[in-house]
Length: 519
Image (cartoon, rainbow, N blue to C red; front, side):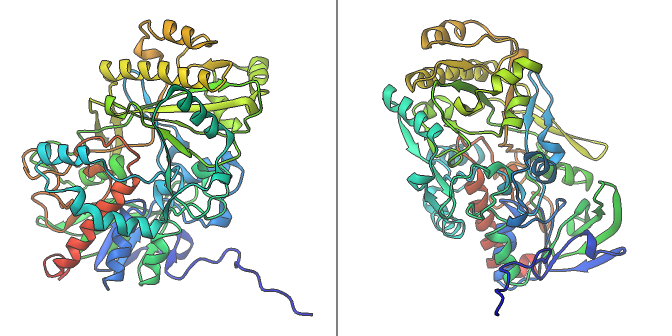
């Protein structure tokens, strides 16, 4: 009797993907281009340059996982896919917790997949404030190329969960603008595991889109390798030096990579640290500065009906009614019970009683377009972010919480739990307006983010910016930055597609000027 062959060979990796298990001694590698980081910036650059015929090597500090490795064990997924278990802090009052992915595919493996083009007024601001000749028209071909590659599309209705329909119900009742989310997904089934590795492969993260494309055209990917510094000959970047990151986090064998072009795509926190460790300085004094965070706060609304927020897609809608007022969006985002429980102040029996209502909960949040900036300082080779929430932004978020609470009560919520220490529950929209109309100490806020931007900002003036219009370091030869570090300002919307479009644009510029950068 014939036996069907398995669709996957367990434990097998694609050709040209190497991990700590493949590096059995100190190693020296040569290539045309070395890309440090494999997320929204690094992967498109690698795929575009590999397709153009250049010998491209991607190096990633995190490990290599495949779709079959993503399970419902949230604790394991957080440990494996998030840097520092998702508990990194920007120091300030209040401290801001931020999350970064650390795996092949970077933060695209753990984000919600929201795919939005850069708003035109943001690009206009970049032209005015940073002297960048970047317009919606000039970016159009790059956005189109990215959207085709990662399959940007609206959600299928049957993948939208009840929590998101309730968000829409409340927005419609208030008469507020709400739009369907565009996401990088191919017929999402609505398992709501976006933030912990998509278990179906529907979310078209860099892991399942750009990385396979780069491999197809001959690129090599080295996972479990941390880069310590960039090497130089004078002012010309010549490669990188790093080491294998062992399973326990200890230092393994040394890795030296010699290249004609170096691309730093480590994200807005770790790119300035890599450049600083490498002795790179910017005459602007802005390397590591200009840190924007898009501060986020959340509420938990409790309904008297089952919501089962764990069924359905992550953020199927965004409320954009107040986007022009600094409140980028309101959205419904489900979290697994173990993660949500950690955010509540209750403990013991009180927490147990509260979590009995998990199926009746809607977790909703808002994004603030910040008006202040922080900075990243490199201490003993490691980055530390510092960020002080502006009084204006805190007041705007407080107003946003009133509006979000009004929406949820309009949708039928019976109680709302607030993101402040020792805050009482809300039972009505009127109570929300009264309570949130009072001053709330900054130290009481619980603020999080996943959008770190701006620490190697682009600009035409090298005395005021770190990189040029394509991401090349001012006053340094053959060193390209390709991540959200480049943003001169916060962009109000989810940044992934902007990062990918700018990275694709930079790769095209390198290809068009190959004699200059790759000879």
